[in-house]
Image (cartoon, rainbow, N blue to C red; front, side, top):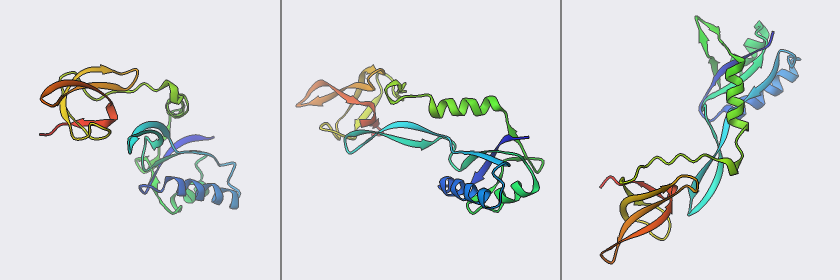
Length: 178
């Protein structure tokens, strides 16, 4: 019977391990025992050089999920794969992941369209921040307004000795340590 299992990989080797496992399963005729390999990723928005970009990020780095039937052959194939360290185990045996948990992971990975992002802004009104990108780079000030729908915040910065509200993307600021 097929179940989902968590397999620990070396950091950054998730794709390599997946490709190798798929090829090795075909080569050894174990496709019926190892049916699917999933690397849970999600799209996130980040700022780079003043531009918003959507990038894929693994939300379980160093882990892959494998839908498989545990046999001596399939288990040996997984543990002998370059880049794989071992199964997530309890008492030395691989622990199956509940199907509900896999469904939640798939929903998180597949269910969000870029236009439907719920941007979580990690700041509060009154927080001291430093602008790190854009035309107001290196200005510091306090947050006066937060617009989570647009991912924008207003920062009160001192320009020529007067406090002026400046609207910036929340990714263009960081907490002011000074």
